[in-house]
Image (cartoon, rainbow, N blue to C red; front, side):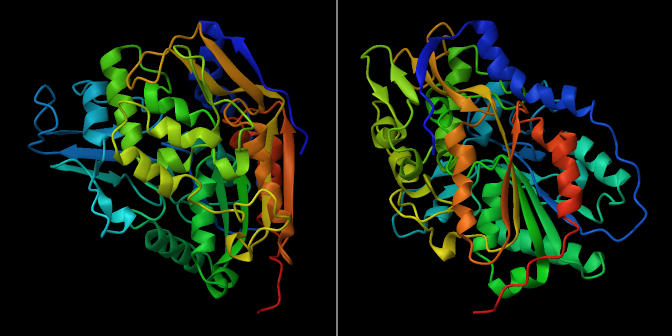
Length: 444
């Protein structure tokens, strides 16, 4: 892999917002410009199940007699998802964060997934699970597929998930297998094509590597990961200190909000699963620079980050278990071939973006939890898709080692991370690839 030189540059507030807050808003802007394809003649379509990006699934948060914070409503509800147009304004962002912060029980006798729970009195459920309305940000994709003969909520289904959780939690595996089996049956026993965007492919890959080969031969036609975040990304480490408000995808502007948001991310195992994995990244990029000491941290230094002064002790426990949790290779950078147990072993038609400066690391005032980020401090960038760097987007090439199944990775230069699912060329390939006959491989 050709290494692209990394450099520290000062980032102005407008530029920072362009690379962070403006990233996701491009979905609404660019998605509307995608022309709908004309309807095709054949009514038979390979059903598609979509795995949405990080916090693109509608979650309903309800609570009764909460004891998290006396300044927050005693009981109530709100929906949590990116770009929610009608948030419950009676619940502040700080209260939202505190109500969604997971509790961790450190009993080593418990399996790691069983150590997490919601706050007392809080329940979190997926709104309209399986339906396209459960992930409204992909409306342009649904509309384009409909124009080509697919039918929403029949041959287009959505495998949403609680983005705080990892795919070994919350009943994800059994729930998703059931959805795929139902989709298969509802479409004339046609195997299903999986589509994942951003963090979604992590959940799809977990499903594929935790389902039997026989189940996959019966139910899975292929897999299109769009900018799959398989080895994680460097930018996630900074959120442990600054937080991130997912509704608008902006960094908190007050210390109180920065602390409530950062502690929410510290409590969530998906934060660590989505952070740059040392076995893939090593010391290949700076993810945090401490302005107070001049020290720089790379993914190889993750332990020093999660044990910084003020970090709760459980952060190290969670990080040790969940960084690199969804295996897509053998975790050994010197190895030529990944372990067969970590290969999806279905036909893969991957998509990525490139050619856009992408923030992978930030300079913080120090390693204090809950600090308001100063955009005047230098950031660290690499080539990427504005959200994920080249290391992340190219890592999937190890799947070319699949002994039988098809693998391709298509680059889309200049197409940003959040426009990829709506790009006409990407959607055009999806429509073609989903209709291909799956590769028939020998049964071991």
